[in-house]
Structures are given as C-alpha cells and as structure tokens.
Image 1 (cartoon, rainbow over the protein chains, first blue to last red):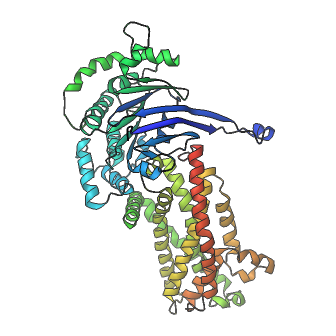
Image 2 (image 1 turned 90 degrees about the vertical axis):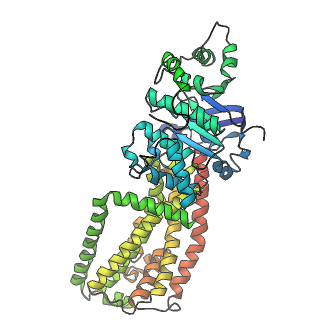
Image 3 (image 1 turned 45 degrees about the vertical axis):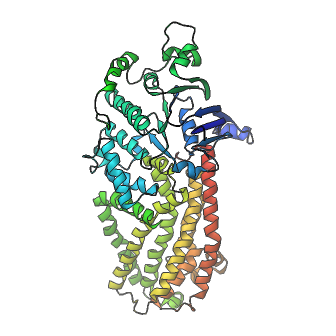
Length: 291
Length: 267
C-alpha cells in the first residue's frame, strides 16, 4: 500500500430541496449542487496533510466522505487500503475522527464515562479499555479532570477530550475537522503543538486536517491542498505552493488569494501572532497538552 | 455484543438518573393512570360482562393488562426514532457513526434502556394491580414471557421500520402515526374488540397488538397453557417473520439513502 489515503475523481453532488411552487412546476426535475468535484489526492503514511479552504468550500464534505459518513456520487477513495463505499466497516476500524463540535459528547457524563462508552463502540471493554483511557487522559493532560462531568470542562478541555476520543482505537489515520475552531489562540497553539509533536511526530500517524486558518496550515502541514468551491485548485508543500507565484517572498495568504480569488478570513489570530508564537514550539512538555 | 449492550444501558442509566427529579416523577405519576382506570371499572361494574367473559370478566384486570403491555408498542414506536433524533440533536450521532459499530446496532442498543424502563413500569403496574385486587394467582408466567418476547420482537420491528422513515424524512413518519392512532381503537387496549362491529374487527386482526394483548390476558389472568395460546403465538410468530426482515432491510436502505443525501446527522 503506497498511499494511506487515495482518491480518484471523488465527487459529491447533493440534491437541492425544492420550494413548493418549484415542485409543482417541475415535479421531475432534479436540482443539484456539487459540493466536492473531481478530487484526486494521494497522501502518504505519516504525512500531516492539510485541506485549506474558505467556509463552504467542501472541506467537511470531503472529510465526511473519507470517514464513510457520506457516500460519494462519483469516484472512489481508499483509506488505509479499504474502499470507503465497499469496506466502510474496515475503514472505520482504522480511522479516528476529531470534530470541533463540543456537543458530540454527553455533557452529563464524566469525561471518563464518555471515553468508556465510545471505547465500547470501538469494541474495547473492561481492563483493556480502562488502560487505554488512562493512557489517553494522561496524554492529553486530563487525568486529574477525567472523573468530572463533561459540562464542567472549558472549551480547550473539551477539545482535548475530542482528541483523546479520536485516538481510542489507536487509528492509523486521524481526520481532524477544524480542530481549533472554537479555541482561543493559546489553546489552539497547544493543540497544534500536540498534533505536530505527538500524533505525527511520536506516533507516526497520518493526519488529514481541515482548516480555514492559513497560519495553522502553514505551521502544521507537510503538504497543503487548497480547495475552493468544491475543487482542489492547488496541492503541494508550502514552498512548492509559494514557488508557483511570480512574486517576491509570498505568504500562504498570497497563494490562497492567487488560487481562490478570495482574501482569507483572519481567524483566531493573524499571521504575525503565529510568527511570534512559533518560537515557543521547541519549549514546553514533550508529551501531553496544557492549556 | 452483550458488553456493548451493557455500555449503552450504563450510559442511559447515568443520563436518566442525572435528572433525578424527572426520574422519580415518572414513577409517581404512573400511579394516577392506574387509579383512574380502577375507579372507571368501579363505575362500569358488570356492564360489559358479556364481552369481558373471555378474559375473566373483570374490567380493571382487562384494562390493566391493556395499558401495561400496550406501553411496549408505544415504547417501540417512540424509542428507535427518538434515539436517532435525540443523538442527532445532542450532536453525538456522528461520533458514534464513525466507529465500527453498525448503525442498526447503535439504534437498537440505544433503545434498550427504554425497554428496560418500560418493563420495570409494567412490573410496577402489575404489582399495583394485584394490590388493588387483580387476581393473577393462576398466571402462566412462562407462557406470558413467551408472548412478551414475541411482542417485543414484533413491536421492535415496527419501531425500526418507523425509525427508517425518520432517518430519511426527519419528521412525519407514517408508521408511527398509523400504529399510534389505530392501536388503542382497534387493538383491544381499553375495551375488548368484540364490541367493535364485525367489519371493523377485520382491522383489529391485522394488528399484532391484538394478539399480544389477548395472549397476555389469557396467560396472566386465566393461566392458559401454551397449546391454548397457540392462535396468538402463531400470529405473533407470523408477524415477526414478516416484520423483522422488513424493519432491518428498510433501515439499511434508509441509512444508505441518508448517506447519499448527506443527511445522516440532520434533523
């Protein structure tokens, strides 16, 4: 298996909801919108691959197709060697999914109860599950708070629990859908550091990360794909992408604007803040997260 | 699978008991519906004796079994679709669906707690009924358990069928509406179906709840043997043979449809 993730002409078209008048006038007409169009990607094992695009570009649809939550309209994809449409069970055994939606947990259960429940869905029970949960709680720096109710956690803690849940089955591939969207700059920085140093660094996992924060993509990703209106418009390392521009010392923002025709949204923190923080990357704890 | 089932039950037990006040209120107000029918039966007295004779002749005993066991149908109709909607609204469904656990298993196991809670409720109904004078001294418990298992299989399949519509349509499930509106009228929950005109009784014979309640009354109130209960048991087996594959196949199709539409987690 040369590539951990491989897509061929992956396309997703959604049927549009018809208004009542439209339905009466054209009952048999099928109106569709294309969310993802002809995506061809090849991602190697251990690579931290970023998919960068504005809101509504198709990032989440692409991730959900790769996680088997949505079936493609056309094209195929293989994750860890398994076809996403034909072997969805095998795909799900080998992936983890980290969402930024903090509602994806049971708020009235403790963090540990949540992990125990999701571990059982991955067929981990009893001692085996407890061992893994303890390991992950320590890893994400939540050991002391693991027995508190989820509703008492801060946004940063909730995101750490989301990462712990994504790693429950020790997946070969981790999909992360805008993992720092709800976090303040400091917390977001720690998540990025953890992903870079631990998940891809120590563990050697393949990470497929979607983001609309340019600095995040710039700081984290080995390669970046820029997606706009459902199409991948550019793929490469940061240097490769920059080299396609006929401009002295371009930034990723320039690349983004060049390929999408759009100014990027300055999210949690502008570029210069990240430039300043990047110096902090070498310091701190080698494993685990602190917010 | 049983370990997974226990995980779901523990999750739902913790969630249910975390709302302590609601948890106890549900038990407390359960008493009210039983008492209402107890006093109605005092009023009715022996008025409908001719129709009740086949079930032992006492209206309170008749209606107690009716409201207790029809609860399983209501639970089945609600719990599967509500578990999907609940997880969708809480936002937890997506996180569950990216695990190797099959979607049908997730929906089925999510409903387990509702059935356990319903069983406890039925037990309490029967205990209170006995305290209020219902005679179950001749009950054939083994036969009642067989009827109960077949009832849960039948009603559960209808519930899964109903959940298939919820998965695709999100609201406006015709199965739920049909069974909710017809079961009390035609299923013999509050009165024997022999009261209905002949032509309406045909509808009663097409509903599994009719056989379930009839069998349960005969087993618990009159202690019928398994051979005497053969008509009800056979009917429930036939319903199960038809409804189980129908429910599972329709749910499989509904999940595929929702994955194509990208609406798995929409509500």
